Image 1 (spheres, helix red, strand yellow):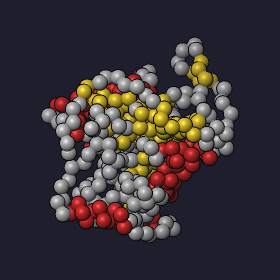
Image 2: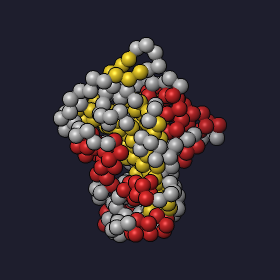
Image 3: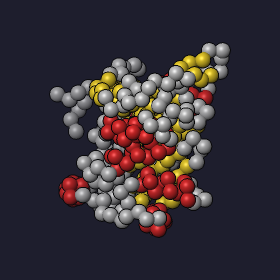
Image 4: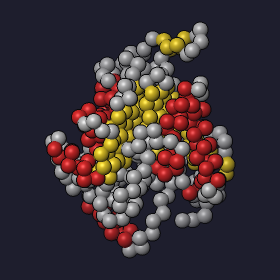
Length: 341
């Protein structure tokens, strides 16, 4: 990798990069919500947010549910299934890059407004792990199934066993085997997640998170994406959060639970995300690790439909869909990565 200069930057612009008209078929909600004081504020609902550029298409699917007074839980499941089923998205579901043994292993979790949760980890051969996670939530006494147990459960509930390793991903993996040089690189989306959080017309929150994990990871590695409280957390009294990037760093601070608890303490979604990134940076420094080598991004939504995002370094973006449209936004960041010449 060529040398790059980094400049510490505590503030940065949020730019709307893409606006579509697919999320304008619902009327503005004029209800109010208590803020704990005498003043009531308008609630922006329904609304859905998701990580990365593929969130635009995912939001469109979620909005079809939300704009017809559908449940947030159904919306987030429908939304994240779009990148899960797209072989051209190389970090989620079908077409995801494999582990170092050439096996595509998937992680996902889902959480509803009543704190019902379901999760799968290291799941193979099933295109839509988010739907398996929901089945775990609704049809078992457990909250997480992993590996062969998750696969057997999925097959017993009618999910189809498929080969998820596409020709392109297999070709890249075989090329990687020539050196077997394992070094995740921030922002190249070979290790990223779609996390989605939504607020429906009834004022209820839900979230979903799904990924194929880091490319060429050790077999059995699990990141933050299927872990409730790390890659996703929902508290229907307060708000919801999801995360993306290097999962080990998110797990280390129980990132999304932290973001929601900070909102409970009165912080805005933006402030909560910024403080969570600050915790990541603090622990990186404590361990003498260079934050320029990783990316972590948080996305948060509160009960009023207010949202925010913050990440370790520039390059992370997210999609927001409400009555005003469907737009892609560049997240605020702590470290600026200048464009390579």
